[in-house]
Amino acid sequence: MWITWKAPSPNNFNPAADPGLMRMPKSRGGCPATLMKKIQRLEMEGISKSFHGIHANKEISLSVGSGEILGLLGENGAGKTTLMNILYGLYQPDAGQIKINGSPVRITNPMESILMGIGMVHQHFMLIQNHSVIENIALGYKDTPFFFPKIKIREKVASFSRQFNFTIDLNQKIWQLSAGEQQRVEIIKALMNGADLLILDEPTSVLTPKEIEELIIILRQMKADGHCVIFISHKLDEIMNICDRVVVLQKGSIVGSADTGKTDKKTLARMMVGRDVVFNISKEKLAKGQEILRADQIHVTGDMGLPAVKGVSFDLHENEIFGIAGVAGNGQRELAEAITGIRRIDSGKVTINGKDITNLSPRHIYDHGVSHVPEERIRFGIAPGLFLYDNAILKQHHLKKFSRRYFLKYNDVKTHTQGIVDDFKVLTHSIDNQIRNLSGGNIQKLILGREISEQPRLLVASHPTYGLDVGATEFLRHHLLKLRKQGSAVLLFSEDLEEIFELCDRIAVIFAGEFMGIFDSDDERLCEIGLMMAGSKRI
Image (spheres, rainbow, N blue to C red):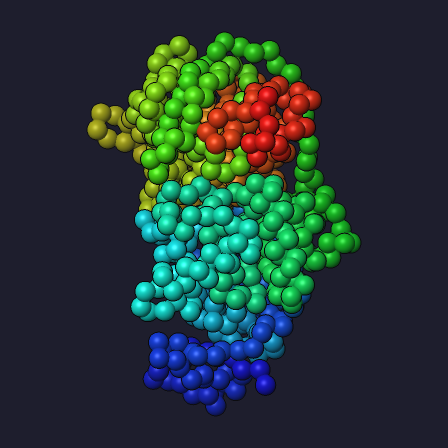
């Protein structure tokens, strides 16, 4: 017999009123001791959800079965994450129901979802920055003991990490980890809880190609073992390679679905954005202009007090995009933060247009014409509790066009913000909206619009297309090439090799804080970039 559980109010529980739901005995901790058997099939029927009168989901119905990987596609703000947050218990639907193995269930919080066998890896990591890896895993693990939790689960976590080839120091603080390493912690948390259904929200956005291959192996093993997987991704190649079926959302509604074996990328892209998408962007040859940036023997210390950048030197010119490729955690973040003033440079020198900007504040470096799209956009790119129009002028509020002495000219600020929203297709019902209410991709588009709008001399862009749908990615890459053509320089940090090869004029490969080589984009030696990224070869 399949047994499901609904979290009832203690004062109004009436099993006869809803025969599809049954109350379960509780463990000493107050949670149900046993909730249900293995998930064979999950269905979401007629799910609707609105925020401030705006539909995020509208009458969505989908299903996923044992041994199946379901892809979920849609533009930024299409409602994919909202739908999965409902399934995970973070939101309650306005209408519709969820069924597991044919029986209706009500999921009122993530703990119930976990106990029912549902795990989720979020696009924005649900980790406590000042706690260690082992502490975060212990907090999220349903079987963590009350006494000495870190000691008792440490070997289990280490064994599990070895099983899936995750090499992470369990004593490191989360804030000391790269985005890719934090992603691995989230995956360990979900899989350790024995999820029968695993929801992955943009899981590969911050992973290297090798890490993606390892994740795909894990997912295929889970599929072979009878698990269900819902895979949200903007990368159509991944959807086609990993998923059995795909469901496409647009503006909160399902606009189509298909078996991946019976469709193609162009069809899915057209379904998702309502037009044909150009997958290969042509880049015209441009002559180098004058030197914009020069970094000379830069040394930077990382968060753990160890050298993160070791004697890096390079230059960057007008009409040029300079790409830095490497596996997460090899000094890219520290180098970007050092150039933009977020992190102190131990030794070495950085100049912009011949002027020394070494260890100036981010504000003063911005005043020298340097804009920055940070790797961690929520942490460094926005003020989540402020409105869109406040976030649209961060670092720019002191400019004369936005302020008069001590007062902001809000009419001009809002006009500027609306221009960014329109030009960069930021999906929001109003600029008088807190930016935390936007989807991750739309937050990224607002940040990009803000940083590009002032025609910077140098744009430092760390993973700029992270979390963007295929249409927005195409749009952004065109903007970067347009910026290049207008005489700006772009320093691009990316783990997407396709993006690096498509956009960059020169490419540096970084490993353990050192450049393994700098190459023109048409250099034949770049075929060995994988070996250089792994530190096996220096040229």
